[in-house]
Image (cartoon, rainbow, N blue to C red):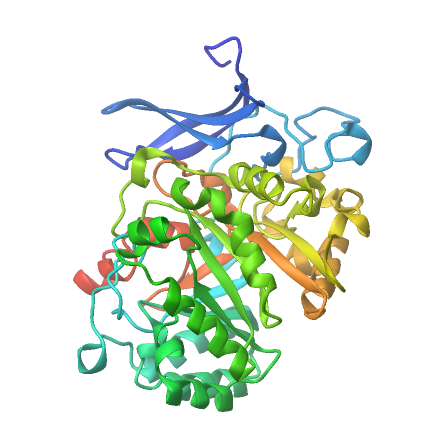
Length: 469
């Protein structure tokens, strides 16, 4: 029972103390807020005392998910209709107060589906962002610290041999375009039968400034199997906080250059309170360009060079959905968003605008996501075998989202990806994680756990120190 009678405990999980980073038990509770019911995580560390963090500013946008070894009835009780549109909650559901069981498996990343595999191909970067989650040291040209091509190929092949085809391989860093064999790696990925799609997570400096790089890039990539994830913060004030400089003109040039080269890209916006009011402005900017496929909104999280959130205000998925709906003037609706059917439903939320002559239309004018959210009913309890398959392949909603992604002329993606740090860590989400990092030792790890543990910097300092069970 929660000690506060105004709070309803939804579940218990494992988390981290944000101060000493030791594992601690945590209660997830629903409580009344000024504008809507909110979801909070309450933790008590024996050494550092109690802490709490808001997980959702609006309980409608938080989904209960916890695993156990055997099938159990819904925590909401028999006949629960929480996931049905008739319940009046088309977005999701809450309920339950069961205690979280032990970990499902010693290394779940080697068992569960890998929807995206990220690999750091360069440790250094040509920018020195004060908020870099990878803590990438400054360096370019001859000072670039990169991973040898053969090592990268061996690690990627190892994952494919163990788990089968990689649907999406994301090349990251540091700044991946600095790798001296970047194009050789792209060609190898393009020709590899075990890799479907390649994303390049880039700050856009080379794309904007290096004409020869852009021309070579156009030659090496295959349209329909490649995309840039371009760092774009949308607001000059926020950009100075996040990047240490105003790079707006450079980012606009990178977007325009990608269009000239016929390269699709997604704007990746790190969201902090200083640019929260610029969500729709960023969407409107992207809609100006046919080759911009959408915006990926990523609330700031405390890893790498950042411990805790700048200003102490940690944003969540609800903050972004509420902001987008409010700022769009009705062009975006709550019903336009749905959790992805793979992974934990609190790990990724997606929505779409439909591009039509003269502007955009809300996806909910044509599609009722609520009728396709049956997978949510199973997320109160899940079994080990549920982690092996990807919901994007096995659920009707997943097939619809796949079809929307293929229709790039008419769709514009709104993607919200809230990564975790020591403040809001929820082990239930790690148990269901399908966004994995291919570590320097070749093993897979959850993105959030890898960077909370120090990422590649730990391996650079002591190669075996970061090994997970």
